[in-house]
Length: 310
Image (cartoon, rainbow, N blue to C red; front, side):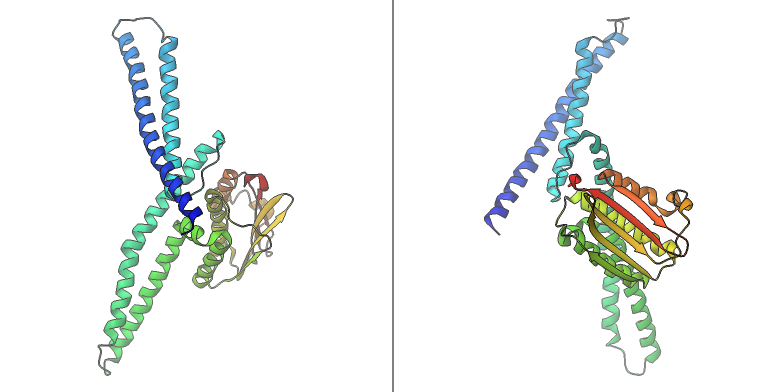
């Protein structure tokens, strides 16, 4: 391990510990402020200060409690990001609710992915191994049994592949942290092609490098949703993913050769085809999502993210 990496890990560990302590202290202070405010309200209700509206000090206690609780939540969010090796979320207040939603969704998906891997995934892997081992114990005249075991093993192997595909769908952070956005999409397309039988292609026409984790996840989710729509609705035989730059933006395209749709059907199809989710992810990173489509000429989903987002 290099000295720089070791120093970074030490700083991250110290920051995470300090944030955890800060979160607890802020939460305690918020509780004290809320308790003092509630005492004032109770005294009014008991007639001690009947007819008197909350004074400036009481209202100030309430405001301070709310601010301390908010800061405690932010400390918790930053602690989570550091613990998981993620980039810190933006300081812009308007983005914090969206960041929290994305963080919660990704944490839920990560937990479900781990449960699938540890439960059903492990069970299928063990079953495949046991079947392969048992076949060697059969005598040569048990042809029917061997054929049955072979068929069962193929089914289990397909089930295991399906589970791993679902896990990748649920937990992109792991694949992105290891391979980056370009490598992660390439790996995802390999699995997608095997699963769907569709021809895939990835073209990266820009040196995009690594991006903050939240931005990579949002872009991955848009591309993933677009690819799933192609599989479900487009009746396509080929799909292409393109990374490029234009007009001060990074652009990410998913282009298929499927049946397409009339332009006036794009907005109507948002709910059914998951376009609303893609728009939400685009908004999260100040991006713009556009869909170009014509009947019998395929569909082009384009996400443009301005440079200043990075």
